[in-house]
Image 1 (tube, rainbow, N blue to C red):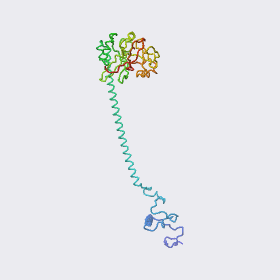
Image 2: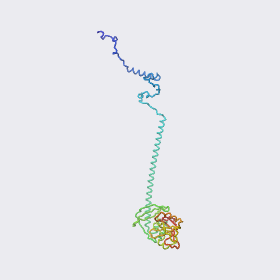
Image 3: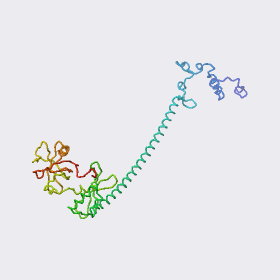
Image 4: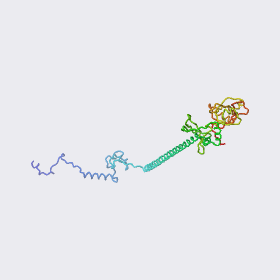
Length: 355
């Protein structure tokens, strides 16, 4: 027994039992060789994949062609990039490039238009400012000229000097001499110009100027024409309401030659003596500024004067200022009835020629 269990007994004489068998583990070099072998076997030129991959017997595996994506095999995560790559068609890239070019061109054009619009707006604003400044300067110069003219006109000490400032001086100067034989020429000094209102008489530009005069409670109203030669001239006749003769003297003398009067006219229903035919004549009552006397003027209904005055006064309750040519009939029995020969103007301003 001692010899059987001694160290001198060779190992090959011993028969190992099942529990003492040694299991050989594959080493790393073997695994590498096996992997290389498997890779060689998986090449297309070698045998088919169906015979070498596990699970090749699954139904439908024959439908996978050589161009199938890795996703169909469930191994997309194992690609070197970690995900699949998709290719964008060149046509879409060209369209995108063209769109970007057009968008950039549109942006440049829009910016240029916006800049041009802003420049034009700035230029227009500059022009408006210059025009406004020029108009303001012109208005100031015009107002200075008006003040000088008003001061010279109201401060004139003689008829000759005053006539230098009036409209139609050749025609008006004799009327002024006649008027100031019956009235006193007064002078005044301008305190302020209170108001200026533009108006039009006979298609000519005029201004109604309200002037405050020293020593007077009421403002003086002047009518100024802006003449073609650039000068400012006063309508003296309407200012003083010039009449060729006093109304009381006119009623007393009853001249048969026609004379021009400035009156207020309105429709009336008084008919008498030679003007009693209402179908032929239209009656108008004529009153005068700063005078208590009055006249009855009659116009032939068929004449221009009759139709014109009737149309103007039918809907007008108050008197209309008119410039009329009047005359008494020969051997008239009426004290106040006159014939309206002509309507020269629907205002007190003579807008005719010098003559």
